[in-house]
Amino acid sequence: MVHRKPEINLHAIAVERIGNMHSLALATVGTDADLSREYITIMERISFRFDITLPATIKRSYCKACKKPYTSHDTVRLKKGLLEIRCSRCGNVRRIPYRISR
Ligand SMILES: [Zn+2]
Image 1 (cartoon, rainbow, N blue to C red):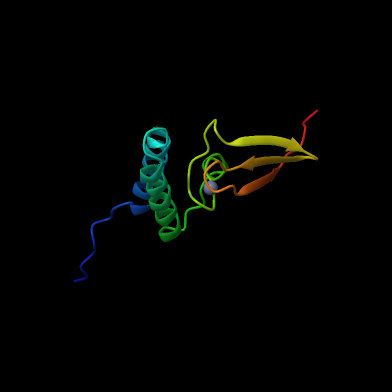
Image 2 (spheres, rainbow, N blue to C red; image 1 turned 30 degrees about the vertical axis):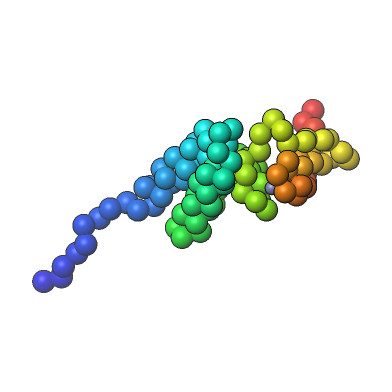
């Protein structure tokens, strides 16, 4: 007789955890930026471990270099079809292309 592991949907739990970590990061960025960055790092590790691609809305909401979620302190500029975000913590510049829909 084959023993089977109880079926737990780890993928669904991972997706839920990613959402939790992201909202925790956004909630703490104003009071404790370092804690907030830790939440983002944990979120990235979960997505890597379970091979989950983070949705664009989450991926673009934090600095890739230092993991700090973007706030109103970060500079955003529109330049030649690019959205430029400068991180207020590490100065890393992120460029995201955009298109004007007509
Ligand atoms: Zn940064």
